[in-house]
Structure formats: C-alpha cells, structure tokens
Length: 258
Ligand SMILES: [Zn+2]
Ligand SMILES: [Zn+2]
Image 1 (spheres, protein in one colour):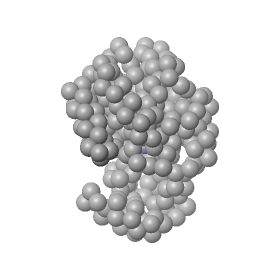
Image 2: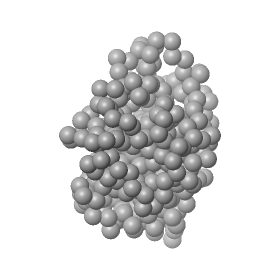
Image 3: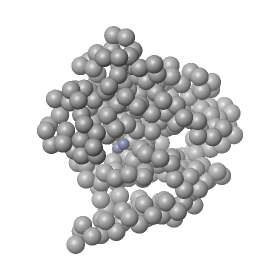
C-alpha cells in the first residue's frame, strides 16, 4: 500500500476557516473537519476517523490553543478527538465519546454483508480495506480502533465558545444522535451543523437516532437565519438550500409515515 503524501486534504474556505477531509478513506466514512482561526483560541469542529495524525496536519494552520468539539458520538467525527487536550461534547453523547460505542474498522470483512452493500450503494466499491493509502510508514489498518476521548468540558444549549474575536453558541440539535450539537455564530450567520443537516442523505434511522427529535431539530433549523451552513459531510450551502433540505426531509418523513 502506498503512503499518502498528506493524509488530510485541506481547503481554505475563507480568511479564518479551513476544511479538512480524508480523501483516501471510503466516501461513506469521509466527514468534514473544520478549523476556525480566532484571536485567542482556534476552534476545531470534528476530527475525522483518527487514522492520520490530525494535530500534526493542523500545525500549518493552527497557532493558538485549540478547542476541539465533537458535534456527536460517531467515529467518523470523533476519531481524532483524543489527540487534543481540550475536548468539548454534549452530555448525551459524552459516554460514547469517552468509551467509543460506534464500531469502526478499516477491514471490510469485519462488517456484515448488508453494511458492505450499503457502503457500496452510492457507487464506491469497498476493497479489502476501506482506505487506499496509509497515513504513514508502518501504519497497520488491523490495529486501527476508535480511541477513547473523554470530554474535558460538557456543553449544552446556549453555552458560548469564545475565540476572542468571534463566538459560537452551542445549539442542541438532537435526532441523528441524542447529543448532536451545532455551533452558531450569529454575527456572521455561520452554522457548523455536524450531522444534524448536510447536503446529502440524512441518517435518522440509526439505533441511537430519534425521529420526533429530528423533526423538531429540522423545524428549528428552518427558522435559523443562517447565511452559510458547514455540515458534517458534503459541500457547504446557504439559506435557500437550508430551507430546501429541511422541507425535503420533512416531506420525505411525512410520506414515509403514511
Ligand atoms: Zn453521524
Ligand atoms: Zn457523519
């Protein structure tokens, strides 16, 4: 297996925001990692799978003490959280972040056949391993596991994460998981939404999901005056697309319930 030049692919979104992705990982597991530069602190929204060394990859962009936030408990969002000394999460997902409850392996044969079929359903075949490069010499995919990352601070609705020159309010957005959160900067109209909403198929059917909660979260998001939404997966979008995605979900759910 070849070694990736850079495990993380970084894209500069604007003067303060950088997005990182893991391009050598199977697309079903690829999530967005967001770095926000602040005056006194930098913010990290989610941390990917924990395959490559994220703190090292961030050395070029991060020059302040880093506040790392897990938008929720899933391995593809909190896998790298253990690398960072300041770790924030919601109480309802904290136990699963402290002691990872989402199974994740890089070996395709470790998954049930139905799940492999699901992973391949978007047209991306799963090889024997879910990565097509290694992050560094000596990496062994069979040794991969999601490492515990006990949150150092529990956050809830209304808490403020202050970076010095900008601040994010924590929105509790349950449904995808009980402890899903978003980070809202009212001044710039920017929302980091985790897996509560993104421009792709939404998961409200997991064992830890709750559909009534998800419906309430979506109605709430519809009323949020967001100019830009940076989600846990897929591309960012503006207010019109936000409303479209919410309405699409609500209609799809209503049709399914009949
Ligand atoms: Zn998720
Ligand atoms: Zn996700």
